[in-house]
Image 1 (cartoon, rainbow, N blue to C red):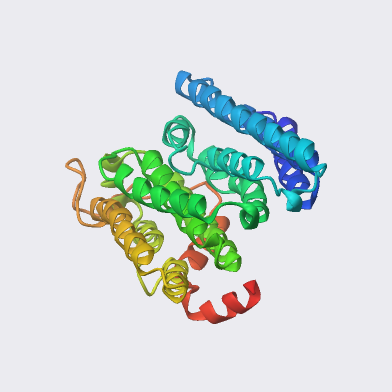
Image 2 (image 1 turned 90 degrees about the horizontal axis):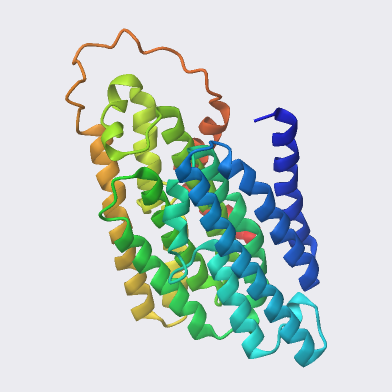
Length: 348
């Protein structure tokens, strides 16, 4: 892609998200979401491959549907109450419709069906943008809309996303689909705690972005898109394989890695709110996700590809890809648990 075109598209992505962040009026927020969607479509379709074009079409249709629902809900609220302000979404029909549309935008269950299919058709770099940056603007609106929404709806979205995100990834062999279900499960953790401690939602979102970026960049560095291709990474780059395995375990929420922090804090808050049944279901759903992360780690570190020689490979050459971003994200994905109190203090 032409670097000037790429710069315009990436600038538009930033502009759309910033516009949604800064707006207090529904029309401006909607405009930011639309700019975001339009900017990523050429990035998704740039491979000129039937799978990429199909993924782009699916993404466009779901995002256009969600944007139309948001506009309809905002207009309904303005008609009923005379208010276009985001924080004054007081009509129950409008608030429920808006939350449903935003859930469709970020891929919360049961509106998640587009997410694995779209991510599977993209390359890992565009998939990284879709899984991280594209979540920010809708989540900013979800956090503002949540206080006026039915708490039962938030709980149902959170529980169903965590369970489906865990179940859906169990029988997958494609890494991008596994990461899509991982994303759905993490979104569930963020939504479940939103009504009780919004600052924990922000902490979880930030750490999820660090950990998911590490996973995508590591797989891109290893040029792996299927579980089978992971078996050959150990002989090519053992250090990358070790850090990738730990990053995946961090996504699964194992101590002493960064990913344990949000799950621990959320379960603690749910117990404080006297919701032991919800906390138990969430903890058990985390085990489902942990299984497919362990499956990836097993393929990477404990199996060897049949065609791999046991001797040191003479073609273990230096990579030409940029490694600074991967190094920074890996560090944050593995080592932030000791400063959990500081992160929580900053969030509150």
